[in-house]
Image 1 (cartoon, one colour):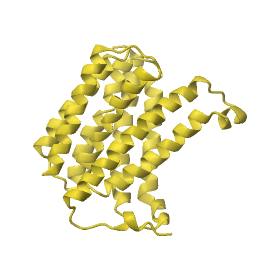
Image 2 (cartoon, one colour):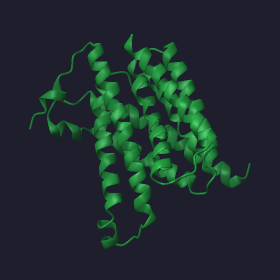
Image 3 (spheres, chains in turn blue, orange):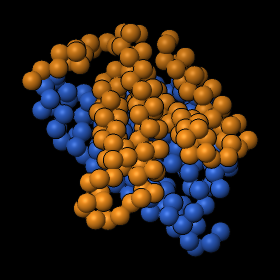
Length: 117
Length: 132
């Protein structure tokens, strides 16, 4: 593995972690909506959107040097982190359909990555 | 200003509410795919000048769709489990791949085709688990 690929993988890995926390904050912010348009400007939603933007920056920096077939599927690692955070922060149960569905999605994205040269 | 339709938030989520969450994320994936294709199109004649940016309609619509997309994701997240709804976003890969074949004339690839079928099965498995 070249140093440049390792650097790209680190960046995309960071993008997946930052993005998964973005999802957590969007969920936290969503619970604060009260029907008023102003409630969309709550700190949790704003922070969640900022994390999503930050995640995109890491991702774009990461994929700049190519090797999409490796890097593209790595973004979907974020779904695994989100599964863990969902249980940790929101007490959502781990269920068989969640593991099974997620495993298939990761496999599918891996294949899409293989086809993206 | 009140948005009463999105204000209702039962403490215990009923199946109809959970289906609404899935339907919203599903719509998100369609919008997200359209946004990606538009932005790719817009980046093809990207120039870092104000006039070029303000007249780059595909790029502007693409960004706007991302905004709407995020808004809908937030509304969806009120309706169900994050761990069920969030991975559904992977359907975006399916639409982007199909739209790239149709609109960007990309050559179909066996690996991509296998991949998008597996993603669809995976999302279906997640969705079925959500019904119980």
